[in-house]
Length: 441
Image (tube, rainbow, N blue to C red):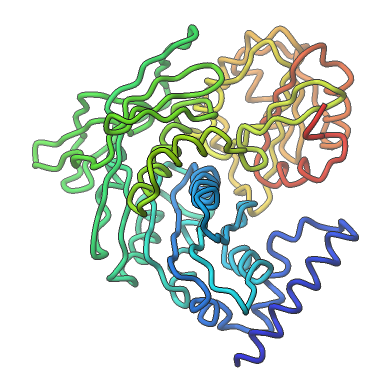
């Protein structure tokens, strides 16, 4: 079988070269499908080429957190394999490993973002040293069901690896309740300060969150967003004491995290990204990366495509922010420049989630004050248009263009300043291949 493994590595690199030349597809999972056909136990063979294996899972923030960890480790002189484009199901993970592995080398780390439902599938054949869990929000009800199902998927994966070290978000009562592994480390936010005229905003769609232990409503001393905060229950369940504690200061262009008395300037906006950065900083500290290296290198981090990524369309600054569920969308919507031209692209392909009822839980009411025409596109453009109408946006201020390329072209023509694009996942993949969206002016 080792012969098939080596052959699959050669074939993966040949296909990747062909895809790069022809540009037929981004190839984030197609190579993985082919490799698994040829070598079904590929992950078992890949184990011995990687010294320390790290997985990141959770509903939101996986790609940014794994990208941050990968960047910080690489800049500290380590060799790293990372599924950087966010393809996090089994084929995408195999895709990343097969195209990057050199059988003549041994790598220091693998940083693998893992879909919640596929963690246990990956762990069947792939070893694990660390698992970072970011958060658990309601997401893609057609795939996952309710949060209890998502939590069970992850817990099943944890149960397969008794020597695993867990790095958990203490502020999320579902995440902090995971058990197992040989060691459990918590990180959490102590407080948040808003600068540059930013203000905290409360969501009107949040529901009371019940105790994972007894089912009674949790009581919060502090609540940051969604169910994340400082909580306790009369039954004794409470937020665990974090090893890594952050006081966060949010600015319009960046954030500053004071973690256990050490300051880190992060080039990302929003409290949701501050949590991602805290997870990455905490893990790197656990791995022994020096504080001064983390402080220096985190400033140079470049986001993955569509995660607060800046491109240029007809010379106009274009911010692309992935949206895929109500909590994530709400946090993104808090950061939207309401003076920019807004394009919202909603698809309902399998990777997006067929159920788009989440649009009614996300608070699009805030974009109603945008002075520009709002353009909606994608396979569920009409659903988005209806949602905007009920959010108070005038029908004459909504433009429906189902074809994504035509919608992007239209926005590029009418925009008089900056542009904001909010796509779902498969729409994001299409945007990433469009030549009109460029990294430089």
